[in-house]
Amino acid sequence: MAKLDPAIGRYVYLDIQSIEYRVYFEQNGTGIPLICQHTAASDGRLWRHLLNDEEITRKFQVIVPDLPYHGKSLPPESVEWWRQEYKLTKSFFMDFQVELVRALGLERPVYMGCSMGGQLAVELAIERPDEFRAVIGLECGLSRARMAPTLDFHDHPRISNEFRMQSMYGKTAPGNPEKYRREIAWTYGQSAPPVSKGDLYYNFIDHNLTGGETQRIDTSRIAVYLMTGEYDWGNSPDQTRILAEQIKGSKFVEMKGLGHFPMAENFTVFKSYLMPILDEIAKNGRK
Amino acid sequence: MSVRFLNPSETAHVRDAINSDPEFKLASRFFSKDILLIVGDAKCIVKLRDGNVAEIKLNPTFMNPWSFFIKGSVETWQKFLQTIPPPFFTDLYGGISRQQFELGGDIEAAFAHYWALSRMLDVLRELENESARTSPPAEAS
Image (cartoon, rainbow over all chains, first blue to last red; front, side, top):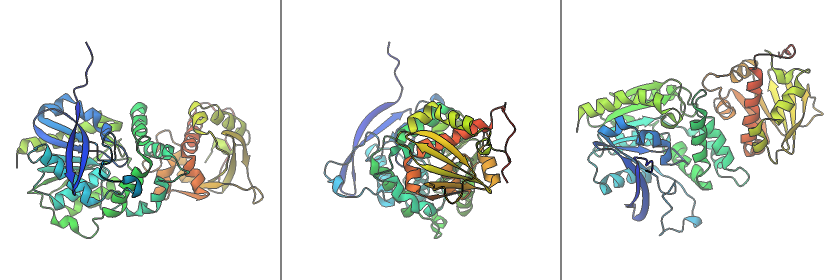
């Protein structure tokens, strides 16, 4: 008998800002919906350990989409994407999540994202608090604008995907299983050349919460959890701590021994930090 | 601080260790550049030719051109070369980003060959942490 993975993959059609996208997602489990958003220039494979975790999927319906232009979600058919620069905007990124929730009929899901997905967690808490019961932002902060000068090297004819693979490998924490650190790098070698720079436009430029926007977050309407790996040099624990201090009622956890990709580089360690948060969300029930 | 790649009696061993590393061999194709490594006040140039380290030249002068340089304090290199470095000292890009290391010169070449470059630095780290040394280390100021 075949050894089958419990995660099921399929496609859903989403209308986002008047354009139809055929979006790939994987899901497993029943219970409170939990959307897991991947990082820039990667795809949903980063969440594969969580998707298969029996303890989590007993209580949560885990949904892992590939953002359009990522993984198995192709660019839209109605757009001549080869004639325009790919750029992920905050507006599109937020609308994507909300359309996904509506299309799948999810009731106030939990949103969890990492890196650019983590930045979006905070944006959603500010802009769309009624759509989600809680957000969990991994590896996020107020702004990463200091990295903007590096954007051109993420889409350069003489700098290949090898740079992305190796630089992202370098964002994992030493001591974690080598096979998983390399697997993260592998996914970074598979995104189309313009995707990294386009995603980082959101991450480095369009995401900027230094103007006091976080004061609009009401954690009695939407719970906010922030988690950052000790070894994440791209967005350090101290940067997330500053963000957390600005969100009254938020909770921040520094994850020892983990880097920028906690869910993928060492899921066992990540889960030890995540479970108390998921348990708290489950205990609070439907808000 | 002692570093093997600055030790005159060990540069040949360091060169051979890098060249024989399986991952470096894969990563270093088309890599022909001269990399200036600066450890405090001490320097060397790692000369890459067609994917192999041809020479590690110690104490270069202004008459020895280089393609790009990686510069860090003795303390920075000391942290970077630990088996498990502390946060922000684990890799070159992070070190540059956090302004522990300085990268200059032809940085496009450095990023184009980043896999080979970072693997080479990892091999230097592995060599630093080998338990047995064949000869006394050189001192970098």
